[in-house]
Image (cartoon, rainbow, N blue to C red; front, side):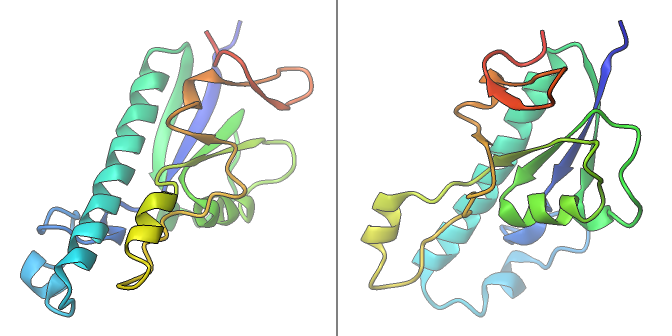
Amino acid sequence: MTRRRLLVLLKPFDMYPGGGRGGKGAPSSTHAFSRFANPQIVHHLDNRRKVHQDAVKFCQNILRRKSVDWETMFRTGLSQPIRHFDLVVTVGGDGTLLQASHFIDDSIPVLGVNSDPTQLEEVQEFSNDFDATRSTGYLCAATVKNFEQVRLSPRTKEIQFVVFWK
């Protein structure tokens, strides 16, 4: 049986600068955060970056244990139509999924993983200080909490919440 091929499409890590660890070309922490006077905002943005990175690592670790071939690409690297994959997994939010949709046709299903879901308690806590909303994820079918239980039906190409390819 042929192994399934997946493309894992990622929101860039350096979207939220943090301590100069954002990757090539990322501004230093001094420059990146100098425009923020509120340390709560700085902490919030750095936490968002860490949560996203952890979600990416989590999804990659799950895929390493499965009988699938997969490769990773940042969504900013998309310039040609996506072909020769059985599934595209986007890790980010609705923006990452929507960007992928511009490069695929209806023969390749897309599974959106919301890497940083909004936390209602956090939004309420900081509502007077700043907007603590995280990733929207209305179009994403999964989060790290249920990613391992998602499976693609081989016949109908529908996404089902059971066991990912064994």
